[in-house]
Length: 452
Image (cartoon, rainbow, N blue to C red; front, side, top):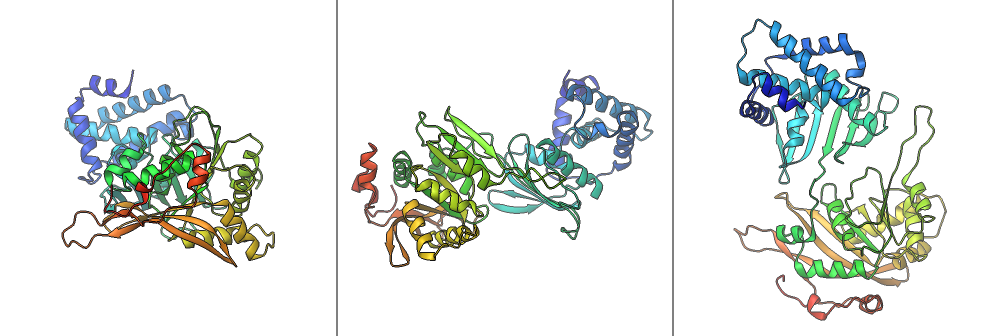
C-alpha cells in the first residue's frame, strides 16, 4: 500500500495533504512542530537505528515503519492538531526520512530550476532565471548534513572533512554540488540544478527565443555534416541544454559515447553508451577522470564522442580525437566569447604537461574545431545563443574566425525581448564539406534579415 493510501486511511483527505504540501512549498509557515518531528525521529532511531537513514532498508518496509512511527507519536500527542496540521507533519517527516527534507516540495515544483542552500536556515531558488529567497529551512546543521550524505551515498560518492567537496546527482538526474566545513565557513552548502523530465527540443528553443529557426537549421546541418562543435558560455547559461539539443540531431544509425562528470544528457538515439567519472575512494584510490574516459572511449569504436564539459587536460585528448577521424564530436566549455573559448582550450591543453609550443597547440585547435556556439544568460534571466562562429584556419599564430550569426540587441525601449540572433551575411567555408556528407545549406540561411 502506498503512502497516499495510508494518508487516506488515517483520515487525511487528499485535498488537505495537497494544501499542506503547497503551503510548505511556498514557505508560508514556520515550523511550530519541531518537537513532534524530533520525537518521531527518535522513535525511528530506537526501532530501526541508522539503517532508517542510510538507505539500507527495503523501500516498502521503510515506508511502513515511518508511517507507523508518525501515527504512534501523533496519537500520544496531547496537542490538538487539525487535519491540515496532521497532513503537513506527516508529509514533512516522510520527506525527511524518505526524501530530501524541506527540499522535496522544491524538487516537485516544475517552475524551480535551481535550489541553493547557503546554510541550514537559508534556502534560495531560481525561477524563470531569477533568484528568490524562501522561508523553508532545515531543522539544524545535522539535518542538512544527513540529507547531503543520503544524496551522495546513492551514487557511490562520499563527502567528509577529508574530502569536503563533492559532485553527485539525484535519482532523477539533477546535478548536485555540496561543500562542507571547514571549506564552507557558515556550515554545509548545497546546490541542486534540477533535471528536466521532459528535455528541451529544438522546437522549444526556437519558441522561447534561444535561437531562430534559421540558426537551428544551420546547426542541424552542421551536426549531421559531422562538424566538431564547441558550445561556450558562462555558468547557468544553458550550455548543457543546447548540447543535448544538438546531440539529438545525430542520426540514429551512429554509435554515440557520452563522457560526463555527472550524467545529464538525455539522448533519444538507440545506440548510446554513457560514462561518468568517479572520484577516489577513502584510501585515495580508484579515481577515474574525464581524461581517462575520453581515452578509453577511443577504443570503443565511437562514431561520435560527446564530452559534457572540457575543464582540464582532457582537452588535449579531445583535440587529438577530433583530429584523428572522430569528427562530429561535441563538447562545452566555460568562456565569455568564442575567442575566449579557444584561449581556454589552449590553456587546458598546456595543463597536460606536454610542453607543446603555442603554435602547435593553435594548429591543433584550428584544425579540430570548426564551429563555436556562444550562449549567454541575459539580465532578465532568459538564455540566448549570441554568436555562431566558424573557425576558418590560422594565420601565423592567430586563429581566424568569422561570425555566421550574431546577436542584435533591440533598440526599442519597451521591447519584451532583449534582441534576436541574426545572420551576418557571411557564407561559411564548410558548405562543401557538408555537401560531401549529403547535407546542403542554401545562401538563404545566411542572408541578413531580422530573424526567420
